[in-house]
Length: 405
Image (tube, rainbow, N blue to C red; front, side):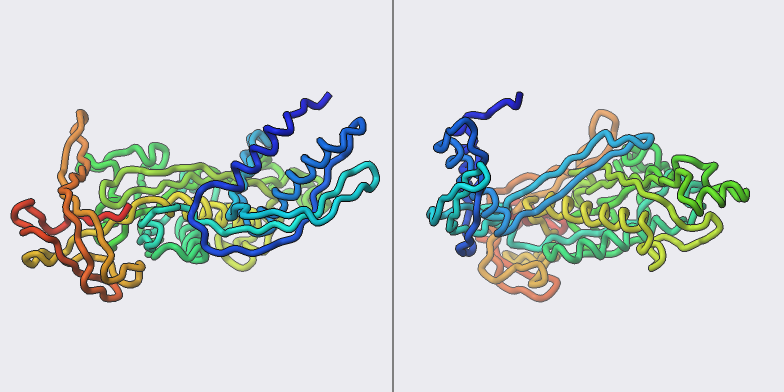
């Protein structure tokens, strides 16, 4: 017997999801029809559930972001997760019509919806953040032999770069020719000779990036290696779709903060699909033939999901930029109009300090000096602003940081 959730709780849940207090951007009316089965003559309950269904359809019709994650182990689907994030809230609703059909209560409603911002009240969400996409490392290079996919290190980074460009909220640097990790098994926990977690902060400073995206392709193995043998029997089975030609794709993605080098987000993405090409065919990762294959389709879907989730993670991160020069009360910084900065914007001023933990690994610490900078001039790639006190009083120097929360 199906467990029933009290109607008041169901309706409260959809109202809470649809009526979050956020900053409206635009509003419009949509007409939707909700339906619910009438159980045991309980028409009032069916009517409430139909209204609940209509409101959910209205929010989804206006717009929602959908992401999914699947994990396959040894051919068995052990995780299948879908997340839906509403992009709207209900402002008003009016019931236009109710009718019964085939034992179901149908409610036709006009619903006025408002688009909402992802980070209400956040100054940082109005700025485009600079992101460097590094080349990916391959944990088991021998797995790339099938199909000639050894170029996955640069190819995957290029594909992710292209997918992130569609998000429109980031300034992107494509550095796919450079990899962060030599020891892929330990990545990203391996320290450099300078006892830093990685070289992410160094690359970020060179490029002027706030975040660094990197990763390791963990698995491109096939489930049944004998299915790709060169014997006539193996070829016969492949031709008749009688062999297991499933191939895995697993990649772990890391997002580093470019100022400290610390990881702010990491996630493993997995996919699996048939590899339908002849074992002797070398197509290369990212070629047109690769993307046209079933396996390539699944990898592309995975890349799109990666881009969406990375963008979601970075939207509400604070916006940060380095001070490049101190000239009296005028401070010059490494961000400009391309990021969305305009004259009159204000930023909090932070001093940067280096520190060492118990394992003598270096890190960066920010100290709020409780002083604001007001932007006075903005150029495409840099800008300047003024503070109210002499920088020498708070020892402001090059590489200190401006932050918008």
